[in-house]
Length: 128
Image (cartoon, rainbow, N blue to C red; front, side, top):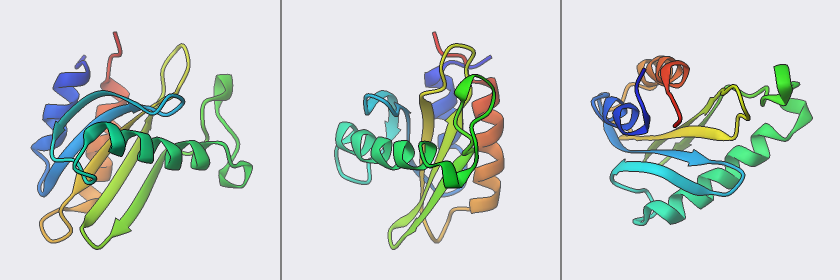
């Protein structure tokens, strides 16, 4: 079972990966980062993506939460001129307030492959 660092390194081997982070969406803090940051600062990017994750997770129109009030949203995909941003929620036994943010190059990245791999990474991620 990979921890945060192993998960982030695994994300960076995806085609077109520019940067990745594991973020707590309630506080906006990055628990780990690797590669580039879309905003030039990993902490600023973590805070910005946490706002997006929080908005998606807390909206009832996006689906009801799972067991123990886990967010019903599995992931969020944002298409931008500079690439794709994938936010994958991580379900934990305690509280599910963590997500993986992957920034992909628009020309080199494979959005479908990245989404599948992030799902697998989120299922195996161990938060210690």
